[in-house]
Every structure is written in structure tokens, then in C-alpha cells.
Length: 124
Image (cartoon, rainbow, N blue to C red; front, side, top):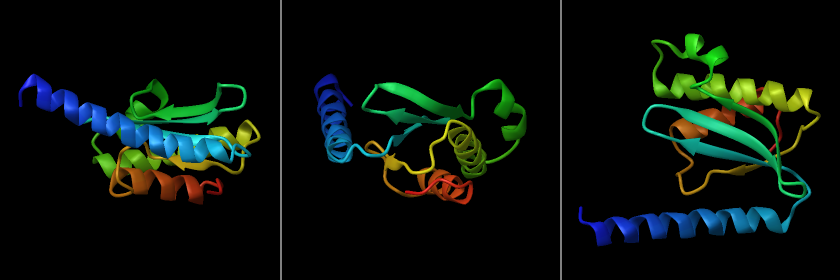
């Protein structure tokens, strides 16, 4: 893939992500659950857009979860991260969020994380 094709691809992805984010911010009564997915890890943040602060976060790469994620597949790691972020958000006093999946499809790891966060007590 040459440089121009790669640039178009990332421009398209960022435009799609910002469109989703813009629709979520229009009704800013709840914080958003922002998902980032890399090839090996998954991380999530609960962001309050009114103040611009991160209320809670979790990642499969942090020390407390790294040992639990050892030897598990990516979907199982996403489930652990979803449970942990739900627990931390509940401690911070957040019970309702909006899912910001960025440009990722609601499928696979993103869906597993969202389902685990719902089971952990977060309402979407």
C-alpha cells in the first residue's frame, strides 16, 4: 500500500470516528465509553465531555490485568477489561454511559467488551 492510499484510509477512518463522536456529544447528559483496539490489546475510557476528564479507564496492558489476561484469547481479554471498567465506573459514581466504538464495528472484541460492561452494571 503506497503512501496516498494509506493517507486516504486513515482520513476515511478518522472522519467516520469523528462522525460517531459528534452524534454522541449532541446529547451530553451521559459520559461516553471510548474504545481503542490495537492488534494485541484493548483499552477503554469513560470520558466526561462536559469537563473533558477521564472518569475511569481500563486496559489489557495494565499491570493489574496483565496477569489475568495471560494465555487468554483477545475476546476473553476484552471481557475482563469490560468488567474492570464497569467496576471502576461504578466506584466513580457513573452508572449510565454512551458507547463510542470509534470506527470499529460492533463485533467481536468490541461487542464482548460492551456486553461485559453491561453485565458489570453499566447502562448503555
